[in-house]
Structures are given as C-alpha cells and as structure tokens.
Image (cartoon, rainbow, N blue to C red; front, side):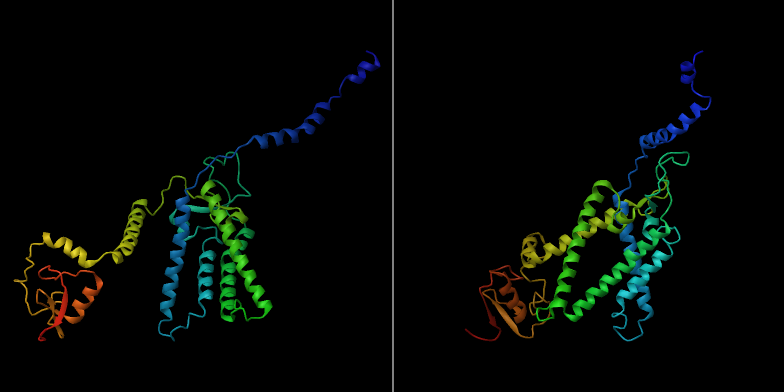
Length: 334
C-alpha cells in the first residue's frame, strides 16, 4: 500500500470527531421541527374570571367599609384609592404570589402559565396545558403594573383634577402636563383596544400587562368544568337586557293610551255606576278642589284632570270615555 492510499484512510477516531461536529446541527433540526400541542382557552371564561375578580374586590370593599360605618361620614372617601390598592394587593398576595389562581380564575378553572418556559415535547407533555407558573420577576412586575400602576394613575388624575391643571388660566407647565396625561390616556385606551382585537382573534393575553409579561391563562385541570354554569349566566344576561329594554320603552308609552286600549276588554262597566261618584276616578280620593269635566259632568281633582288634559291632545273621561272638551270648577255657573 503506497503513501497516497495511507493518507486517504481515516483514523480510528475520525467518526467520533465528525459525530461531535454534526450533533449540534442535528439537535437544532430536531428542535425546529417540534410543534407544540395547540390549545384553545375559552375567551368567555377569561372575561368571566376578570369580572368575578372585580366583584370579589367590591364585596371585600363593602365589608371593609361597614367596619368604619360609625365613623365620620366621608372619612374613607379621601382614602378610596388606597383602599382599592390594598384590597387588590391582598388578592395578589394570597393568590398569584403563592402560585395559586385568583378567585375568579379558580371558579373558571384557569391559572397563569409562563409562556417563556413552556415544554414543547417530552414525557411530561400530554395535553399542552403543562408548564410552570409565573416567575418571581413576573409576579413582581404584575403587582407593579396592576396594583401600583392603577393606584398611581388614579391618584395622579384626582390630584390634577383637584388642582385644575386643565383650566386655561393655569400655568403653562401644568397645562402641558395635563395635555400629556390626556395623550397618555388616549394611547393606553387605543393599545387596550388593539389588544382586545388580538385577544378575540387568538384567545391569548386579555390585558396589556399579561401580553408584556407573557403570562397566559390556561386550564388548571383539563377534565374539570367551570364552577359557574352558562345557564345561570344566560338567565342573568336575558334579564339584564329585558330590564334595559323596559327602561327604554316605558317612558315612551302613554299610560292613558294603554288604559284606553284595554278598556273595552275590561269586565267592569265604564258608566261609573259601580264606583263612588264623589271620588276622583284618577286618584280614588275625595277632591279637595273639585272640578267637573265637560260635557260629561264627572267630578275630578283639579290637579288630576289638569295634568291629564295637558299630557294628551284629547283626554277622555276615565268614567265614561267621552272626550273632555273643557273643565269647570264645581259650584260655578257658566
């Protein structure tokens, strides 16, 4: 065997060197081909959890205010932002800080998961809901953004409104700060609206602070149903919409017109024989200032017949259903 042939023959450990050289590339290809298990979290559950947390905070606030009910009225009004921040801090301290869901999340079977450290594949991944909770840094920034940020903003707004920074006769610096606050508030609302659109499309991160911190709500148990049934919430929504519709329509209805519409179907006769002619048919009491409806001569209180006549163009007598053309005080002659 000549020298050129010996030079072409690889050494005994050549394959080991090539293996160690290509191993990182092979691992990177494997990692790039891995796809996480897609999961879908109900958007209704996430919104309901936020609403339940607000209601829980309101209930705690109501109970705390009752403790100071015997003190001077308005004592807690000036410390209302501090009270709200204290209650929100308590909820954060005994839920998120100790890796437990908030009351609303617990009822909706939700928990926070750190999206920066989510296992993709492996023996521990079965449903796609696996993953560690929030880190200490995420918990601290969550408290700063939700509790501290809201408190600071509410205090700043109340202070600027009390100092009347928005008035035109204020100093230029205060006026500029007020305009800047308005711009910041507008930008935050626009960002919240865009985040809402992204949330409705993808189902992730219902608030800006959750999106920034990569804190996603996932199901705590894949086989557990929500504690609050949809049937109860549907009834509540239907009743709320029905009551709002009534509040909108009732002022537009004329009670006299409705009464006249149903009067032909009434079993009682409208001739007034079964009722006391000395009482006002509207208020059912003896008139203090008696007036007669013309031409039917039925007796009314002055304010009852006057207001009814002014309310409609052609008022009809409540006893005989005849049009009232004029009114006259009882005892006076034409």
